Image (tube, rainbow, N blue to C red):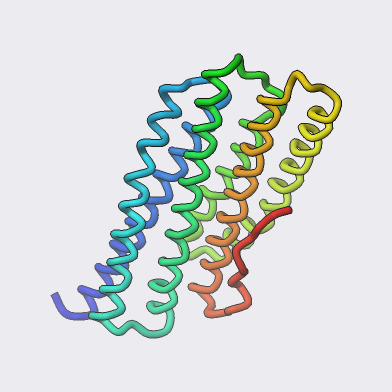
Length: 224
């Protein structure tokens, strides 16, 4: 195997490992949402334990990136791919962390009381997950147009988050009996909004990889 062929193989392996990490994070998120909605403490515990695999992938992929830089001296698009990959796995690791946080909320709700569907957590979670899934698809295919649509999808996630957040705040102001569930759900909807922000970061990084346009790279989003 010549040097370029070996390098191309390394880049493809990098893409494959990032996709696998992203799919793991998405699976954790799906299970975390279901654990919260269905009061499934056992499923929530599985999500928490799964985080170790994503953390390990984060470290392994970062190591691979540094080795590719050190051994192959990449330039242009190859360098953008490798450098941006380290940013992307950071976003994926944070998404997995939010899945753990939501799972822990589900576990608390399952222990303390019957879950009260004060807001449609599954609906917000579904939209955030759709952003992540489309961002991963755009990464695999180098699809700048799809990445741009992911960025636009964040507006819908933000709007639904604001709707659910405002409803919960109003409910907590009017009725004291929903304090525990409402407070925990406020955290859960915020975590899902942040998942959308991290998916947006990934999408904008894809535009940078493919075009070299630094304007496509945004500062990490914080919501409001």
